[in-house]
Amino acid sequence: MSLSERLRAQNAADWDAAITHRFAAELGAGRIDPAVLRAYLVQDYQFIDRFVALLGAAIASADSFAARLRLSRFLAMITSDENTYFQRAFDELGVPEAERTAPELSETTRAFQDLMREAAESRSYAQALSVLAVAEWLYLSWAERLDGPKPESFLHAEWITLHDNDYFRGFVGWLRGELDRVGPAEEAACAALFGRAVQLERRFFDDLYR
Ligand SMILES: Cc1ncc(CO)c(N)n1
Image (cartoon, rainbow, N blue to C red; front, side, top):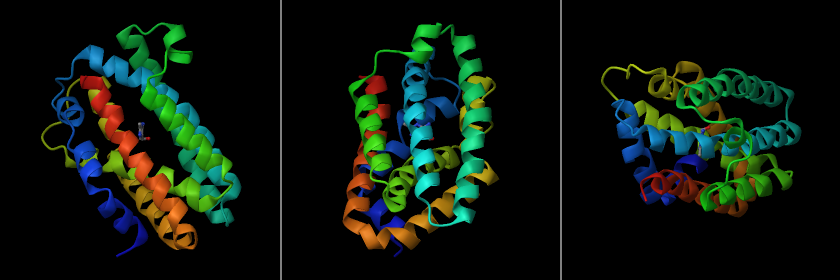
């Protein structure tokens, strides 16, 4: 088994709970409570802030120009298409400026930000990849499982499409390949970060229904 497959298997309980979560089912059916989606997007925009910083750290620590290019193209997508989705969603949901830029952070968001900061500050490409791979592979996995027609509202449909398209699938496959290539040299540190990230992904969804 590859390292990425082994790490996923070691975290199967939280992984499976996250990718089969009520959040994904309700989003896919276009029947999520707007207050739940609003709360999710407000916290997730703060996740994305540190995520972009972590991508920057991966670009800086990568061991090849080819990897830097691939990560940079992905960074460009997050900071264009994905960022404008957030802005349009916030407009649609009436989210004021203060909540877009400086909302009260949940404990889970704060823990996720800390994890991403720690991975970035390790200056290790393998450790940065461990967190990036969880975030993107887990989102591809819940989005790919949804079947049936896309929901009508862009609020639901675009959040699914951003995580279920051929470009994104290819990027996740590449991220896993990079982790499989460089992770084994730092396996204990990578496994610890990977496991914490999977737990936080699950908590991020669970928090919405407490
Ligand atoms: C919490 C979380 N994990 C992963 C992604 C995918 O980038 C996201 N937007 N939010």
